[in-house]
Figure 1 (tube, rainbow, N blue to C red):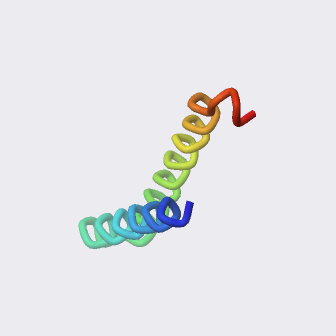
Figure 2 (figure 1 turned 30 degrees about the vertical axis):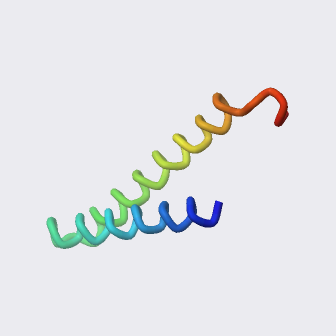
Length: 57
């Protein structure tokens, strides 16, 4: 999970910096980063929920 956390951090930071430099708006960058974070969390939860092995439960 350490590499996963680093990957998520890298994606969120790069997303925030790209949005900020493209639109020059810190508010839009924060909102976009929060939306991306929620999307990544939902995807992770879905993967854990639907792709968990029966033996792991």
